[in-house]
Length: 147
Image 1 (cartoon, helix red, strand yellow):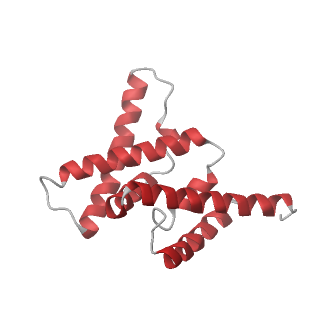
Image 2: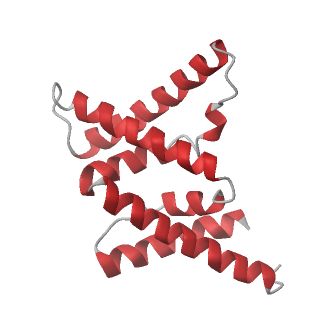
Image 3: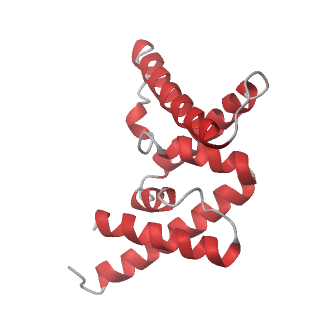
């Protein structure tokens, strides 16, 4: 069912974008968030890492010219590095927090890029609306006996 959820997530994201002109965090992010809505800690940590990534990229953009593809690439690389460094720090400090709690390697970077483009409130609220709607549709199919 996870493959179908990701595909429906892409379609739902495109429909939402066309109807509202607001990106729900990119076309793949709502599907992955919906897939893991059963684990709100993972969703919250992913959103937190996205916000930290956004802040770091904003600071970098004060020194380096970032726009377009370069901005997107820096968001992805920074989120990956932050995820890696967080994992190292957690393991060194023997903390129970794991980078496995972050959803995917690309999701935080994509989300940070969209947050920079249209703002945190618009991006995160639209992402959650689409993700919850997807989850509800999937639950309706599962309870109706869909294989």
